[in-house]
Each structure stands twice: as C-alpha cells, then as structure tokens.
Length: 392
Image (cartoon, rainbow, N blue to C red; front, side):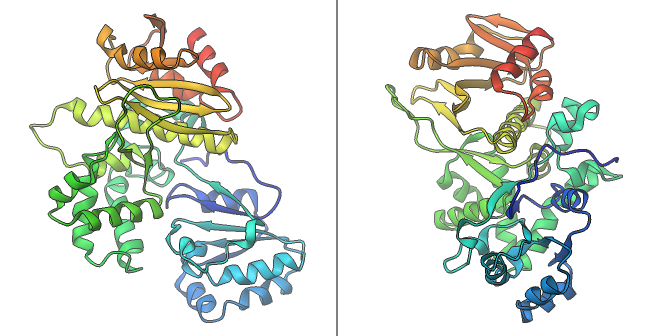
C-alpha cells in the first residue's frame, strides 16, 4: 500500500508523540525527519544499551551536532532517558527531541521526568477517511478498521486477528503489566460487549468471573496502552436526571470486531451498529486532536433512556451527533436528538445514517455517514463540513 499523507502537523519544538502500535508513528517520523538521529528502543540491542547507561544518549547527540532532530522511539521502555533529554534541553543545545510511545503507563508513574512542560503532546490516530481519500470505503472500514499496519498488510484480516495478540505478547506479558495474562485476555473479549455502550464494571467482572477491582485495573491498563477510551456524560446545565457511567470504546472499530466473539444467534446489527458508532467516535477524536480545536467529546443519556451518542462541546459550539446503522429513518430514531434539543435549544443536531440522501426530519439534519466522515478533515470547521455534506 502506498504511503499516505497524514493530517498530523509537525510542531516547531520538541514533542511527545503517543499512539497505539501500528498507527504509523515511526513511518510518519521517518518521512518528516529523514535525517534525524534515531534511537529505536524496540530493538533489543538498543534497549539493552540505553537501559544500562542512559547517559549514552548525551554522548551520541553531542557526537552528531549537525543532526538537529533526535527521535527516541518507544521512550516508555527506558523512561530514565527523559532525564538526559531534559538536561540537553535546558542546555539549549538547539536540538528538537521527538519522543514516541505506545504506552503511557510507565510515564504516568510518580517520579518520571516529563520535561517540565518543555515538550508538547501530540497523538497519532488510525487513518481518517480523509487520509484514505478514494481508498476509503465505509463497509471495509467497518469490517477491518483503519489501523495503518492492518490496512497496509497483504492479508488485512489475518493482521487484524493478530493485532490484539501482539499487544498481549509484547506489552502485557513482556512488561509484566498483568499478573494473569489469561484472565486479561478473557477481559478483552468481555469488554468488547461493552463497546459503544454504557460501561458497567460490575457486569463485566461477573462475565470474567473476577473481582470488580481487577476489572477496574484492567480498564486503566487499556487506557494506558491507548487501546481504549471512555466518554463521560455531558452534564453542563443539566435539568434532567442523567446516567453516571461513561461509554466505553476500543480505539478502532476493527480491533473491536476482532475481539468481539460472534455466533449464529447474534443479529448483524449487534456488531455492525457498535462498529459504526466506534468509527465515528475515533474520527471525532482524531479531528479534535489534529485540528487543535478546543473542544471535548461526551455523550448524553437521561435516566428515562433518551440518548445522544456524541456531544461535541467547546470552540465549535455544542453539537449533538447521533449515529444509526440503518438506511431508513423512523420518527423514533430522532427521539434522543429532539430531547437534547429541548434541553439545549442552542445546539446543532445531526443524525448520521447508512442512507444515501441528505434529509431534514423534524428539524434534524440527517446525513450519510460516509459523506460526513470523508469530509471530516482538520483544516475545516465542523459547520463547514456539515454544510458541504448537505450540499454534495
């Protein structure tokens, strides 16, 4: 697969670049910093070399003064290197340090030097539809996700099936992050049933036949490994009684589908619906991250069951976005957005669905999901994206 341009822009100074494995961090860095001094801590010999003597980084940087960009891949494997980087930055050596990581667990522990704010944080996400361009196909994205290492494989289905195993072997087992790897693997499957749903930790614990505290620890581990995220409930100026639990998502809809057990008793919508919601969620997160827009993503659900899948709140205004895996819209499908509009009359509300036409139903703009995702690019404001999808 031809290397595709990414929406992530290069910061002027030093920065951390986080993202799950396989999202293309290393490929992107080698394209934008072809002459950089590179330290790859995934290589066993490099890991042993710098784990034994982190100060070796200082020596190799000083030995190559003309190479102003220094890339340290998977910095969480030897966090002591951050002390050396900090020292070089305070000496104003003129170097730009790019520090990548696929896990934030080690770096979140107390005592780890995070460079005192001298390096900003950026994130790399799976491909957005706009990055794939003409190669984007909604059905393919829902089946395989958009993780670059999967999409570029000669056998994407097999690569996707092996993705979770790669994490379990190389992150969880190798780093000793979970005492019982078998129990953690069962948890990954059980959590897949909560993808795009309100998360009930006690229920997941019962399904895994383990304690609630163990499942809570596993959820934190997933977040640290950047494999999953949770959306909080939007509660600003709330007049109705709202639920308290967050919604849970795996970071990529293809990874969700690879982990979700399926059988003859499963209805197609039980998997395709959450997959579509997950695809929209990962696009909205990437759009916020790449555009630098000051906004956050939430969801909204009342105790009586009225729900809006996503609430975007911040600089773009307040948007209620519902997602429906169907080609026809019924009045009942708009119940959540109508209730949200009554609560927040200043909000903009859209429904993304699997049909082909742009429609307005009961004051709600209904857009084809594929058209919306294809136009969701960081260089465009959300209102312009919606208007262009409406007029296409």
